[in-house]
Length: 553
Image (cartoon, rainbow, N blue to C red; front, side, top):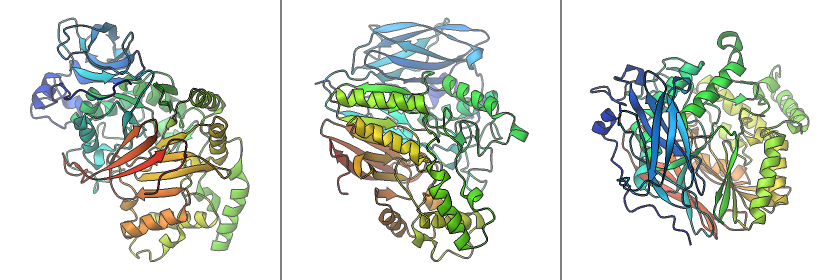
């Protein structure tokens, strides 16, 4: 069997204040300030990262700011002292890519930890990073830390810190909303924003330079920088890396009259993402985990997604509850079922169907979707509208009432998830059944934790683990008047696919695959408002190989 255990200790220098200063991320007395305010702003500015792991290679990332294009050397070794160099090469840091540079190291051994670094022509060195290749052949266990929805204004990145300190994973997954595009006072509001988490630029980001500066801000966070230093990351964007509720041709949070053409903003967001993240330029990709699993990183936002339906548009002009219900019912039987509406698009769907057939046909126990939004059916429990407080803000009241009305019409809560694209979801689930796949969907986006059984036309297809946000608030932020236990019980009882949920806590998932089972341990933080707060509770849910159902919790 291939060993997948990490070293006993990380053997990396911790990113304390001194090492951060040495790395050029912080200036004396400037901890937490926007990067643009820091000096000297030259050399290696944001540490190192790795991603796109394979059995024999991995992508390496750093940023080196200079006055001209600069050729860097990169080195990998199985020892932290770099006594023997296992692989290496050169890469150029250029202003054209905001001084970010990526190199793909090849010729590595499977299931092996490597240390890596970059060296500048003047002899200066980056931080030392650690990465790991994927296994090849018989594999007993593979462990992933899974994250989503990291809004810097709402709190500290304690989830990243905990996962890095755990030193227990083969890789990390980030399912999107790595950052948020809003300006100050929007989300979070001025009252909600945490002191010491200042946004930069101090506006909603639209241009390429602004997207770059927002990445620079987030990547100056020591906990996020440490996570990237410790593990390779497989990541994909969701909407906030461009704009809220984005789709192929626009976004809810994009106004062409004042913010220009969507195509220009989308291109800027994509370019900045591919500069600053340890990712390839491929919109979707597969990762083979020995004989154990295939991970399929999907793109559900900017390539082919049709515009989201809006309950506000459907209910415009309705003057009574009966009229509203009739309009929603007509919508459910008409436009909602439009088979032409896409989330993946035909090319990605065909690639995924073929990949699932190949993976299952090779005898791999698990076919895992690394994607952004919930696949499970989720609608509002009607009883949640009972006893709404009189002082409830009107926008929250209307959201709750519209959700309950949609539920009465057998329509979903969230049109921005797979629930808003039922024909596209049916195509995917049918392809999984045709492939005889054992599907696991990993999803983010909602800020809350979920566990679903997935089925299609009465047949079990697989399960879904939905990860809670790193910092972004969930249902508790606008349904605080409903006791947590009552809220969760009402939602689970009303939704047959939903087996468990948590409505109020932040954190991350520890997902473990073995030949006989797959599980998610939901790890909940005691706080995101207190820096350094740890995990205070966990909840573990398991599915057995070939069962395509969750075990009773």
